[in-house]
Length: 53
Image 1 (cartoon, rainbow, N blue to C red):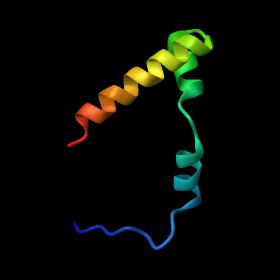
Image 2 (image 1 turned 180 degrees about the vertical axis):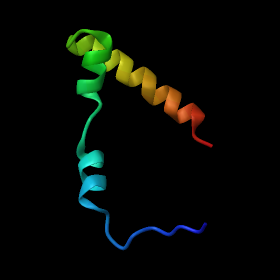
Image 3 (image 1 turned 30 degrees about the horizontal axis):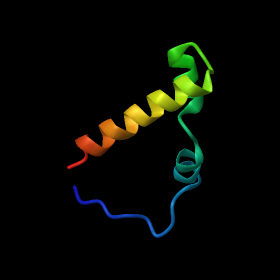
Image 4 (image 1 turned 90 degrees about the vertical axis):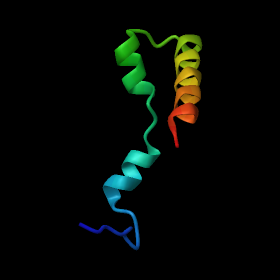
């Protein structure tokens, strides 16, 4: 099956792109401590940088 990008992103794609991971991290970590959230966010950014081909 071939796919191609849409001419314009859907409303759902725009919503996902505008959403941060803060709420998910807060729930997963059980804390809203800004230092801890930043530390985990930074670690995830490093991991993503190394996993992207």
